[in-house]
Amino acid sequence: MSQEPRALDAVGRMKAAMITGALLAAAGVTAGALWMGGGQKPVALADQGILLPSGLEAELQEMLWNEPGSGLVYRFRFVAPAFKGGDGDFDQLRADLEYLCNEYALARLSNLGPVPRQVIISLADRPSEFGVADPNVTQVFEAYSIENDTCIWEMF
Image (cartoon, rainbow, N blue to C red):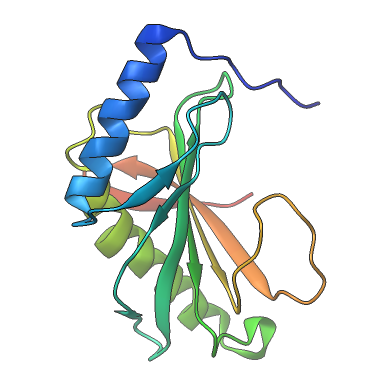
């Protein structure tokens, strides 16, 4: 069952703009692209490489957020060209994703206001369009709730 994106009224658009500005400032980014309609709101961020516990180097492709009726959800989409997906150790992959949530995502959400209901971290071997299936892209993702300034893994 899919939910229609909620249209933003003027106050909602102003709140989204304030949150976006705070996110961009927290990320140390001076330029970004934002879609102010309802539903998914992509923010393209120019960021430096992030060294993961596994030794992979990842970059943020984009950050998306929405409020589909069950609360605020942030999605951080990362790309690591050397990522091989299922070829690696599950524990190491989980450590990389938790690192991205705890060390990257939380640091950028701390000044935004309300804590999101969920943070979703994805890691892929190349950039892709969100929500569009691409059999050439290897991608994994995990969902986390936030408790006591820590990402808590939520099994789907």
